[in-house]
Image 1: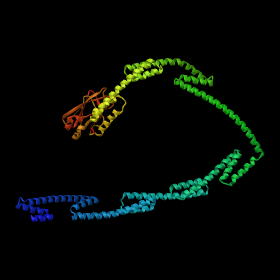
Image 2: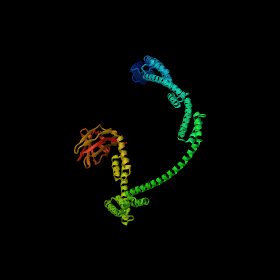
Image 3: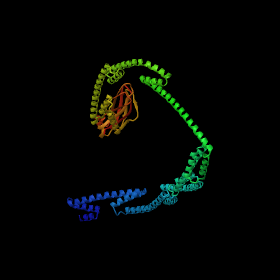
Image 4: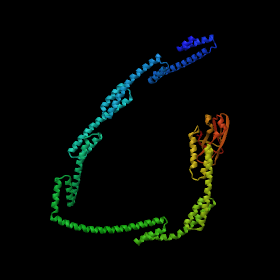
Length: 587
């Protein structure tokens, strides 16, 4: 026992186990020896597990090391050293990897520093210096694709920048030449193009502003001189003189404007010019008076003709709209303006013949509407009857018979609508109850009946859509994903993997199908496992474009209790088309 205790304290658990076992051989029932042996065995098991975990980390580290994944390898060797901190192999590998990673980090830091400096130079548009930095980075990592891309980008931008500088200098020189030749617009254009190349240039905006001022002065002067010259050529000397004086306000002491003013002064002071001007003024006044009289007469005639034509157009439209009294008034106004107007005379004769026909037509329309209303009442179509009796009253206002029948039809229609509302509310109550109980097949049946009542309320249709979307979202098995046709009295079997038993109770069969016959088709659906049939159900496929059929299959015990792996479809006395069929579940 003493030797066992010594070896245990030295963590030599195998040797300690041998001594404790020898002690128990000499004294088999000794409790202390048994306890110490059990503790020793526990320590041996723990050491075995630690060794297994240690070598598992060593193996992973070696694997990562061989694949050059040094960071992951270092992590595994560190985990191994936490178990046996003094293991020479793990310590050696850790030192080796740390040395490699440090060397690689130094290279990477140098590479990143050169790339960062190149990026800053690019932002400052120092493309030549940036090219040198990217080249230096590529010497560290020659195959780095990002560095290659940045190098090419810098090189291309340097070339483009050099091209911009050349074009900028050319446009600047061109602007200076145009300025010397006083071609201000051309000079401004050249400088603006140069500024587009280097928008931050500080000198060019000042040059453009200065040139714009000179151009404005030049344009203003030339505009006034051109106006003055045109007035002078037209003989309008007074206005021409004012225009030349305006030009002098732009460029004072201009010799051309001063010379033209002196010439005009000489002309207007001559006796011949004064006599000519007096004669011209008299002739102009007479001509103006005659023209005003002619224009007034022409305008009056134009307005009369336009008024006549407008009245004829209005009368024709009123005739088309069968507004005979209004049409008669329009054509009488035409004759007041144009007593011999043939169109108005002919139209008034037509209107005179319409009045008797109108009265006959009104009576015929009244009788037709009353007959249609009575027929609708016989067919219990009270809404149509209300419509027809109202039409009859438009042709025979206040008619007692039509008024009495209209009141009866309205009363019957209100009764019918109330009955429909009661029927609708009953279906909705049943449908909502089934929906709350997650009996979605029954819920759809009652919501569909509510839709067929046709009150116009979108609620039941929205609930049907909500159920079908929920079942589609929870689809478990897609039995039919593209349209198939199954002929009458023939069966179609579809195999599938059994549904997980934990969701079978909430299973539904969702089918989109239509009858290809002229009448509804009864469809028998059976299910089973391998060669054994476990259950069935029957559905009716109506005749329309497509029908949503929902069956709560999870309520059948044999569906829940058995691992069913096939479904068979058998239409009776008619062909059907199934566009989709799936096993789904509720929420």
